[in-house]
Length: 159
Image (cartoon, rainbow, N blue to C red):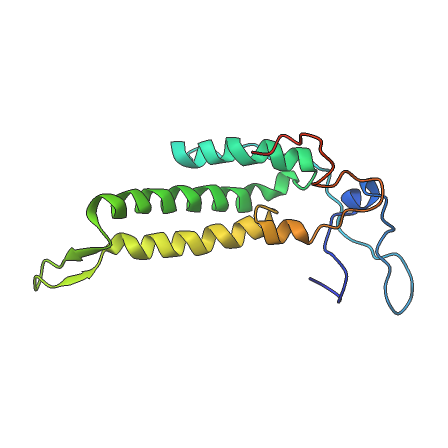
């Protein structure tokens, strides 16, 4: 977060939620920020099938929430690709086990896919947080009077 108590949020989202624009704490002037129109980016070419499937799963929901701009393609691609790599490594670990026999000395050691799994998990979680794809990151978005809350009983389309 930026200043204490200030939730980072795009200006269009603050306006949609009925929130006042950010003001400089010292001068009281409206803070000038880069404003990008909300729009989901196109999926990059060359993504694996698993990464593309994750893209198709999350992007429509993020677009409906109004948190995407076209420039977010890189962080979304990082999230989807890391997710696909993590799942591929998990599949290999499930099939072959977390340890394997080293060729040079015959000793048991961590499977090389374990490092791929951990690195992919860390990358995925970092990118997911930037895109409001984690429960904690979504809690940083306040629900203001008149906005639909999670417990309002309406179906919101999220699985």
